[in-house]
Image: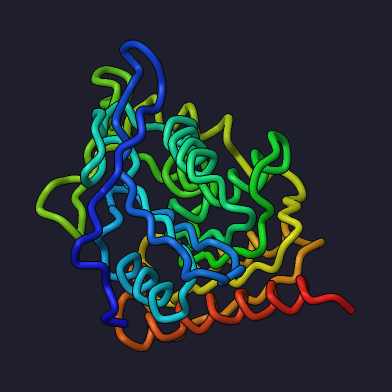
Length: 274
């Protein structure tokens, strides 16, 4: 997938007002003339950005197929402004919603990785509530909905709880970066207000989940739990036996692109008159 736009420059959208205002970076690939397929929307994981392997490969697929693609960096990530320490699910959700409403595609396919999977599920709820683009499908890679309450809080050590109380955050060594992961009290508290695994999730669209069985960060049982909360949707769950959390190997990328193409095909078939 090498048909990248070498001259593609990020655009910036101001989200929030006053002291809460921040500049959100996005790269938008327009569709080829006459291509009515849904717009692909990339949603990165925690501390990841739109220049990562999966995001770039998704954009390459969009170029190959002539479909539109939107990538964005949450505040405190990549090219966007704002402080990472101020980040919460609500804040990053607000930014993703603002970008989607600003570009205003007719239909979207949300492609979310890790925390981006959580934001994708919340986007589905908010787009249904607020109005906006029709959701044509979702592809979730190692999705981590409710990770703050499901995966972090139950495993907090005493020193981490103390740090949260006294400093407002705790640090954790990251296997992906020399810089530690930082989890704030605000992120954890806000996560409780954004839970999706406390009832039925109705996306109204096909969902394809890709999950590594050797994922050290999001257990594959978490993906199975998510499926239980999607009883009304057409859900495909693909387990990758030797897959890790990133799922960025060539074979993993091939599965991702195949899943996205499958959603595009099904959405096109649904749009055709009987």
